[in-house]
Image (cartoon, rainbow, N blue to C red; front, side):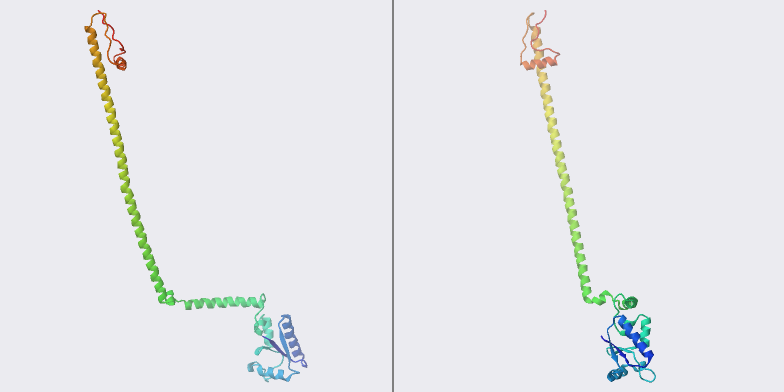
Length: 260
């Protein structure tokens, strides 16, 4: 985009010269590229300027005076509108150019855009909110139906797993008492065998003691019937006589001879 500034290099009006200098000097200060077009020395430039200034912007006599500013073929304004834009920090907007980053005009434009876009965005959101079902149509319904079916399938699997765990727990519960009962029965059998063994041992010991006592009584009777001064050698094994000695108060070995 080229900024065109129509000037009169040989104007006899001091006011026009001053206005032209203000416009050119400010554009140069902003480092805005522009093309000066002299209407005093070039009839084509003067005719083009007069033809392209809008009718509502022309003075009462219908002849616009320099400086007149254009952006390519678009009319920007004369000195008065340029001065107002400069006072409002809107020169780039006046020229139809984007403001450079970091400039006051750029910061102000950002603020205006935020406020304007934010307000419009809220209004548009309120106006354009469409239910999800309406936006997606039948496809959304199908997705929802598939989701429901998956949830039902998961629920059935969880129920089956729960039933399997319960059956396993019951099986373990049934087997546990059986093992425990078997252990108790084994202990009872062991106790019975032990009691039987102890009972048999006691019976054998009692029988042995009775046999020994009978032998001792028999020996005493023989001793009493034997002549005086003679002793009777005890019969039976050595071990049995010692045991009789313990049970009869220390008597053992050989029975003493009968005293007359």
